[in-house]
Each structure stands twice: as structure tokens, then as C-alpha cells.
Length: 251
Image 1 (cartoon, rainbow, N blue to C red):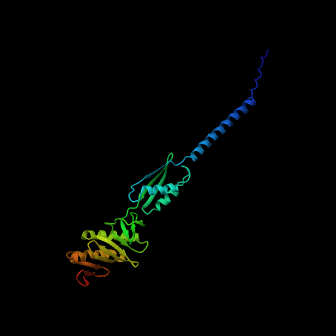
Image 2: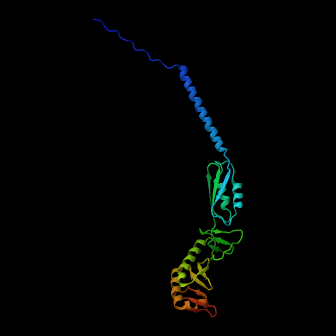
Image 3: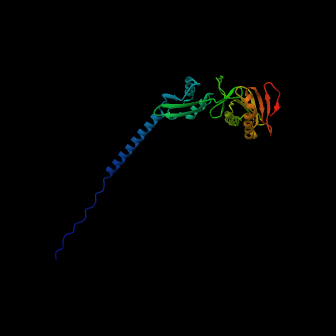
């Protein structure tokens, strides 16, 4: 019986070593080229200068020239390396700057948004309170027409503002307006009325004293409002009233 011839399997050809080596060299060269390009791009980014400074915000009291001078002195390094906090801090040290927000604006600008102080009251003899209840002292006095005058121990501005607003709210229905308020270290409150006269309270009993003032004023004082010099409400059952023409008497 004839047997069929068997084919011997052909051995697989192995890639030549030279071709493999070439591919590896090409890959390495491409990698080095890409690294070089990346390094060059990074170097170019590092060298990007700050070409523009954009200042925004409702600026009225501080001059743009002053702001630009402070910003220019604070910029050091390229666009990517400039320290934004170093720019912000000296800006916020200016008397009329409440807050400064500093950002990078691609590709070569620094944007600075300035929020100015907005005075809501005079504080003491030379300072003012801003819209956040913080004390600030501008170099030059401002037109404080219409601003209430507030006084108190150092650090008490927040408490004084609260008492002022509370008293003003209760007096408004009586036709009275508070022009100023003083608080002593012991907690005594004196509200100066627009048009003359003053009211004296104890801060620890303020709610009860305001209620008593409403009753006393409507019943006995309203018709003589223009003659009032002082109403002292630090009494448990009434008030001591001083008139502009008479001696103090109990009411």
C-alpha cells in the first residue's frame, strides 16, 4: 500500500536584527524630538512676558495711575510665574481699596478687579466704616454729609452698628432719626437725634427701654419734640427728661 508523502512544515522567518534595531532607533529619535519640542514649548511659555494690565471696577476715589504704579512695582517674572498674591496685597493696603481680585488673562495680560471702600458711617474723629463694617482711614477727609457718626471702644464697631440700626428702626415710626451714636466701655448708649436732643440707653436693657420710649414719647413727648434736650431711659419705671428750657424732671 502506497503511503502519501508528508510535507515538512516550513520554519517561520525571524525578523532581521537590523530591521528591529532600525525601528528602535527611529522610535527613540522620534521620542527625543518630541521631548525637545515639548521642552522648547515649555521654555517659550516660561518666557511669556506680561504685556497688558487690565484694571476693572467702579473706581472713584483712588486714581488709576496710583493703581497702575502699585501693580507695576509688584510684577516680577513672566506671565506664568508672576505671583498674584504679591500684586494683590499692596493694592489692598491702599486706604480706599477694600478688595482686589487678581487673575491671569491668557495669553499675556493680568486682570485686576478693584472694589473700593463704600463708607456708611463716620467712626470716631478721623476714620470711617465701610459697607462690611470695617474701619478704614483715608489720607484726606471726605464729604461725610448724610453719614451718621459712630463712636465706641476699639473693636466695637460691629456692635455699635447693630445698636444703631436697631434703635433707628424703632424710632422711625415716631418720626425720629438717629444722627449718631456713642457707646461707652461700660455699655452705655447715647443716640444723638437729627434736629437736636439725645436718648440714653443701657445696651443690656435696650429692648425694654425702646418699648418704654415708644409709650412715653407718644403719650407725653411728641407734642414737645422740638424742646427735647435729653431723655434718659436707664430707669426701671420711667425716664428722666431734660428740656432745652427747663430743669430735668421725672416723667
